[in-house]
Length: 473
Image 1 (tube, rainbow, N blue to C red):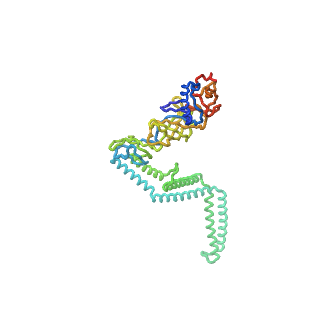
Image 2: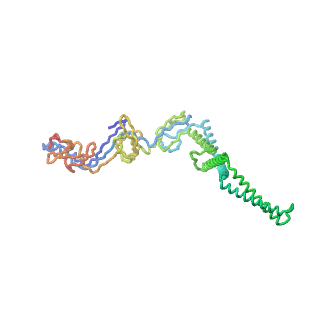
Image 3: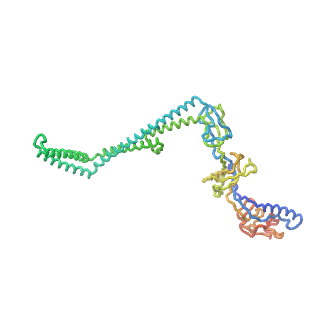
């Protein structure tokens, strides 16, 4: 048996004794007295008939009842209590106000701070702000497109084939211009155009000149390779435009109900986050002037009265969720592998005499706790039929049922003897004890399973052999 920190545990087998066995024991005892008075040989022995029954293996321990959830509620700011809305034993819903501080200048200032913060946030998230954010995204997208085009142009300068094509266009355009000029010089004979032929020649010259100027421009432009600085500037411009677009898109998504990635940046997003934080801070400061229930439960302790002066960390209430009661017990490392979630449990309480309760294993630790040279594991048991008589803090005797054997042959431990390392019992036959060798299986405090042997239901086992087992036949 291990006894640590006031918690003890016992692993044992509990016997479910058939009524026939109980009656047989009573009859045997009565018969022994009667036989003793009559002076017969059988009057020397007390016997009980062999029966089949059920053995239950359990692990026993003790622990204290606790609530499913418990919280000690404290004041987070200083002031004078103005109202107390709950008393011991009252039920409270999550968010219900249990007590508030008296209204004063500090409270008014806190309410004003919250109003200002909320108005600022409302402006940043208004329909107009959303429209401006959409416009910013559109503008940023245009900037990205322009920057990409500029970079593409820089990259085209490094395209030898393209440069050769522009040069070929330039040569062809120069040839067409020269021919058009020669034709015009041959036809034109005066200051003005005098006929249709001169007009047609002039049109061809004009078109050839335009084509040549265009071909010359592109050849001149692309024949000059860009410097690395030109390339770097174009790439940097594109990177900046892309980052600006990403920030604008993220900000718009947040404004319209989305969430921002953890690495999101941008001045607009920063201002929005600051505004939201300001509202949260102002709300928290205002909430500190009252005590609210953090979950559904029962008020089990009240430390607040109207008019009390309180400071931060002053205890106000204790709240417990007693809808589900639990008991934590310590189980030895020797037994922990036999315990599984969902196994049935029986519980008894000194404070509730004569009434057993039931439960089941809800949770067990996967890491043991070493103390005073012993290793134990915490096992959490939940009560399934708790009533108003069971309260947090009560000591519970817990019995975890880890195995059950049904319809097995049982013998009383007091009837078993060890002869030359062999378990035996003595059966009364014709008024004389006869030794029967048996092999034992599982055992409880008072009974053992007969795993094998020449014992059968109905045999009268002697509970009190009078002679030394080694000398009996």
